[in-house]
Length: 195
Image (tube, rainbow, N blue to C red; front, side, top):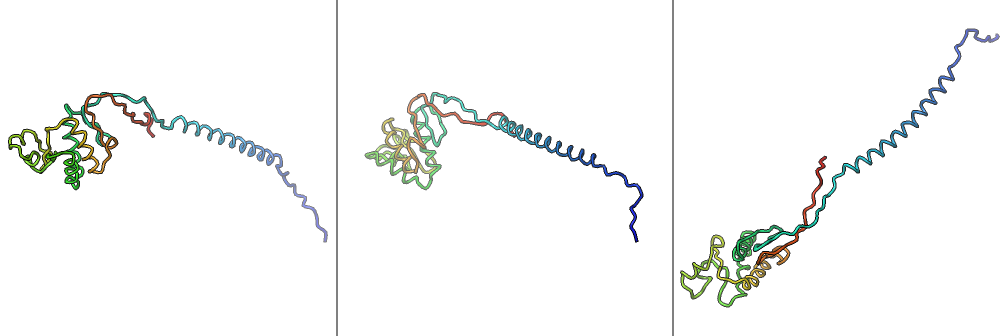
């Protein structure tokens, strides 16, 4: 038996169309690679220009005092005795378990006075009740403070109270006895950009 070729006409295969499609796909892939590279460049640039920036300003000087700086916050007062009392109130409120230790540390700087006591008469042994009431102020419930002090005496007893509380003088606590210029570093904050 002999095989005979199929005489039915076959449509010619569109090889040219296949080559054209392959060329178009390769061109589109090259174009897509270029577009992706440009997209990445633009995203990087956008990230750079929209990133929040820290604004820094020059340190400002301002007039402070009399007053005190307690743990970074400044409190102004009319006179140094008010600064003295304010600092002791802050210490007594914040460190109630160290009150006796602070009072004892302060009394080490006096001869017959305690500077802080439970009653006005304990502040001034041998003085009249009128004297004791005149030169004392209520620090808080159950504690009174001596107000008959000069600045030099306060300079010696306040650091002792601060140390007894566990804080550092001239770091955690500073006293400004008179008005003076202080340079404080300005806070840095992001510019107006929000994301």
